[in-house]
Length: 149
Image 1 (cartoon, helix red, strand yellow):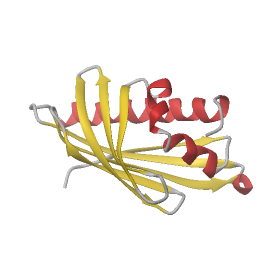
Image 2 (spheres, helix red, strand yellow):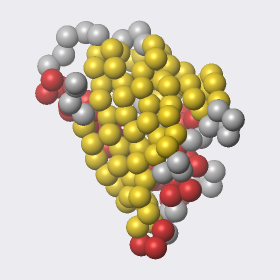
Image 3 (tube, one colour):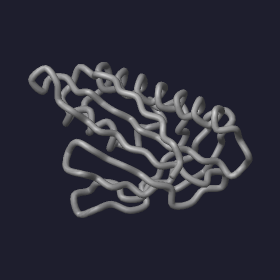
């Protein structure tokens, strides 16, 4: 199995507010940086996205791909690659843990990326780290200063 990269950040908001931003795929282009376009293709009975098409521009990685999402309670969402032009794998998750009496949330983002073109493992891990760090920083900024979901 491929190695993954993981990082965490604490956000000054409740887990529900954080998950509200994570689950609002239509607004990803406003705060993620790399995601330029989104389209929810399928939803579950609770209205949560099950499959989402994303157009990604992360510098060296430009792609139009579809991810399948799995929601575990109200505190975790994971995804796996369904189809892609450039990627062999794009698997990840956001796990939320309340801290400080539930008014703050520790968010752990885990990601595994595998591209179809040859790339050194060290370069892939660095790309994963950059994607994670930008996503967590963008999520924190969006949740703490943006409109509530």
